[in-house]
Image 1 (cartoon, rainbow, N blue to C red):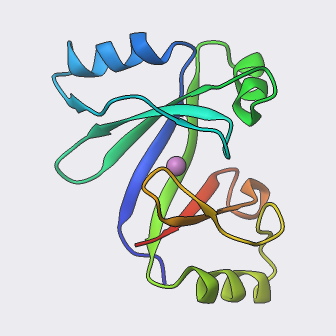
Image 2: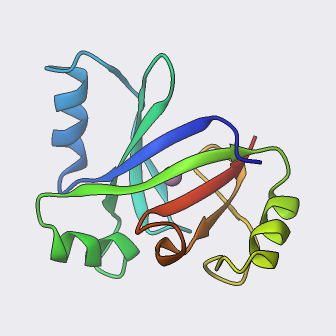
Length: 134
Ligand code: CO
């Protein structure tokens, strides 16, 4: 059911500094910063030949990733995003198999303007999974 790896997301304490590290020493193409108020984060995407890296910082103290930084002040890996063809069908299959979908199960609009859902990390080996309909 899951398809390509769309991106790996990393929480960073300072988005501008992190973006500069990727565009400078690592020599990657980095998108302009984008605020995602629905998700409480500001992000940039590092464009790689085979996937993307999403660098994210909290928009404010109430952000879901503010707690992540409180536990891991230097940042760290936050989630992986897999592509699916039909997010409603994917959700129904996951729920039927006993996996927990975060929130009320209604897809939100992700950074690429496409519907996304997040799956409980305890159901997937400690890894927060995002699925995105492409
Ligand atoms: Co993501």
